[in-house]
Length: 463
DNA sequence: AGAACCGGGGTCTGCCATGGTA
DNA sequence: TACCATGGCAGACCCCGGTTCT
Image (cartoon, rainbow, N blue to C red):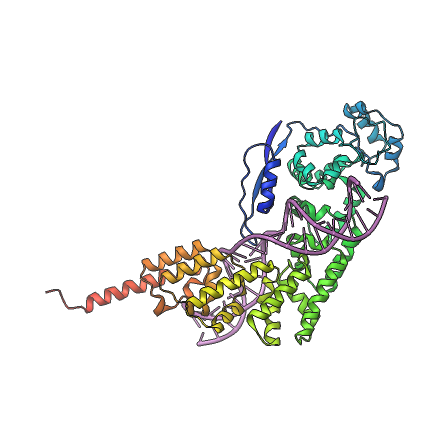
């Protein structure tokens, strides 16, 4: 056995602790980043050097048996040892045209009628181990899968392999979402085709499943997926938006149609309540601006809207414009988080002698200020204020807070070096792309040189 | 031409709880 | 009663460059 590192999508700290307990092998590093900051959690997974995993028989579970031949095969009541030393049977199965041929059966595979509570299927665990799956992790996540008599791990693996997933990726997928191996090929094929309606290539889908296996495998209802796609299309969302939705928030498509519909209706109601004239456009704009909205609960979004309304006390039309515009981006925040951030920001601004109007102005023009972690925001403000920039200037040009602390610090240092005066020249220079910033600072430095030269020339000689 | 404004791109999972069902 | 399907939750930015204005 050897170890390999698998790239994992983000996991919450709570998870990391538990994951750590169940993962054998070297330490696990976690670098979180949400919404644009990179989130990367490499986790070591046990793997085997062998290509193994092919030596088991696997009909689909009874519920989803789609190939009659599989049933026929099982009616042979083949003893377990044969399922493990397999060349012959594999060949036989192939000749029987069983694309979904392989399955794991318990060591006492001749007892095909499952008892009510199955013991763990050791044969399955062995197979998964050989496939490089982290069985410990998988078992902890969905123990029920390991008590199933019939699973489709080989079929699923073959399917994914056929779509371009590497062995490592497949192992990682099953480790994190073991229920994947209960899906039939027919189901997967159909689901894949539905996804392909939105994506150009298999590789794009593989990348998403690798990132989020649950999004693809959690639901067994392809009809619901199909209905979701037509529903979202009917809202007027463009292909580009659908693509972004499915690639960034794939869970949206595993939601029940009803849940998505409820959220859309909720958004439309909000619009109507605020006197908006085109509720459908409003919903479309909000979703398009915040593609994560549909994977949040209505309760969360509603609470955020209520809180924002209470914080800002805007007129209906102003509030509507905010929600339909930049405000949409923060509607998916956790309620407590938004509230805490608002309170911290308010306290800080009040301590800097700002008025309520200033606080309001800042949030309306730059709602993302509420997205920032308290320590990040505090750090950014400290940097700026330390250089003599005033809170008033920040309220006027809040987008300077949009840049990373490191970027702001670096730019402030650079500006200090060339003698930039924020009171005289303003802080706009901080709110520009790197390229533009460099151009601006070069020009500024050159003009300073000229000024110094002129001063020298104008000054009377020392003696 | 340069400044200011503003839109948009990238990017959200894995766990837990719960109701339904076999 | 075990398992499945699904809802809900926590967590927490940065940057670029096109367009419009002056």
